Length: 135
Image (tube, rainbow, N blue to C red; front, side, top):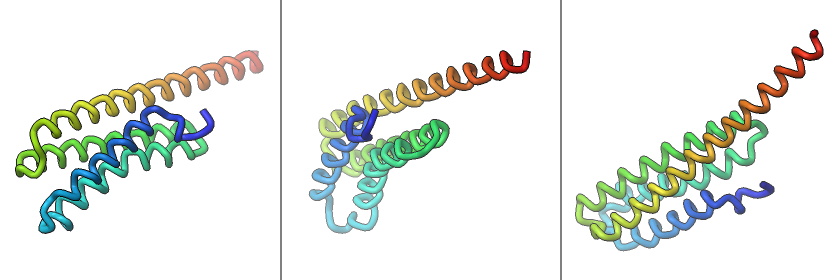
């Protein structure tokens, strides 16, 4: 894969950031430096960590940033729940976003597992070549 822009998980996470930003415009101004900023930062951190990880030199670093993205995703989910419970977010809108973030979470988990398996295969392949040379 050449660019993070081609990653479906990044595309979906980025689309959700745009939705979150549009929703928080309607939050009361008193929430500007409280929930609004926290929610927007956490939401934007998901695709940003995917981008940063994909730009790293090693699979291990990439996976590390994907774990960070997953942490930010869960933080976002909590802030959305809080917004719903504070009656700043309609229950139907919350349910829709929760489903979408659940999908992104599964996609992130799948990408993490895929990268870890790829790294394991690569490591095992190098290990067997070293043994062959040493025999």
